Length: 521
Image (cartoon, rainbow, N blue to C red):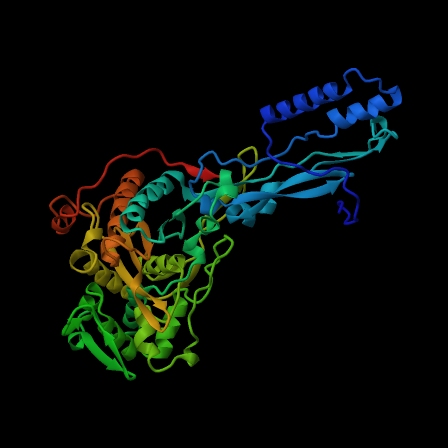
């Protein structure tokens, strides 16, 4: 079809795109030589010679084309996405047009394209323009540049640090995201396996998937922070309230709920620090299913975050009217509900942000070819979920997770960390699998005034451990150390402070950094 939608006969067929110049020169030379060979010594009538010569030397020809290149290779590949092409017939000529296929390339395709120029004029029968009859001449308008909140150096750090768990634990995938809790800005978002957008045709479709937004998992124990914050906000509990955890077994709605250790009586703070399923379930039962459901929704679950990337999943949250009796003991501990890693990091960022949920932000601005800002995007508050006081109490419990709980391997030398581990059994046929896990750790620092929230997810680790504190928390630590040094984040722990003993046994911080650079598309 042409630009008006009418069906027209193609004047030529595209044989191949992205042909290197040297290859084309070889093809053209071969055609010329072959014509010379087949006509050598033959008497060809003049009226036949011309068309025959054109058939051999001009039947195959080239046209200049556009191609999108990615100079940083696989850096932020699943965020940037890649382009494809489509054939458009204009003025009886077939042109190849670059179009966004996935990622930012697809979402902001219209902004990146700009507009074609056009001329209103008259031509001779030979299609030569008669300039004196030109009436209008509209120049092409370049597309806009999309400036991301992604920091290329932080992104590089994250992608580097994901290599080690991928090698050590042999999971299906490993992902990490770095967010500023106060603004919702995403500084890094990465998943391994990944791909090179310059070589999309050779890539595995699974490696092109941005699992942080497309894949839904039962989050497991990281979800307990949502239950905790809601119950604190409602006044249903206080951190020093104590619950009987039944020495590791709790029968509810005819089913037995287990803990990974035989805990007896634990305070609320200890329930989070030690990640007790039974203690969290009893907190939720005290809060009630309607209020529990409300806080889960208010923290952003069961709905898309609105991030401008294709393929974002909404997660799964059963409507409260569909909850069976057993659900109040299972959903609050991260079972029977599914969330994306993006939803989880934004929810825990809200706790670090004094109870205020922000919309995730990955595009900073749109800039024209002269460097002038055309559109500036600002941070957006979604809602206040809990009070500052409730958020502070939740942070206190989350600090205990790192200081003396399941995530000591996430402790930093110079910063207090608040966080939560997760080790979720993956659903299988007839129940939950006993050898497939989704391990995670989400933490923020400095805990009482966080600059960064970092989430690490390891899907189905098969070697050297599977607990979130074993496989995900150490990755958080390495990313946090390097990123904090690069961004020059002010420490909140002085040398010799109370967290040094824990942090020192997990290794000293790495050093090194470069100037901050925004990624430009």
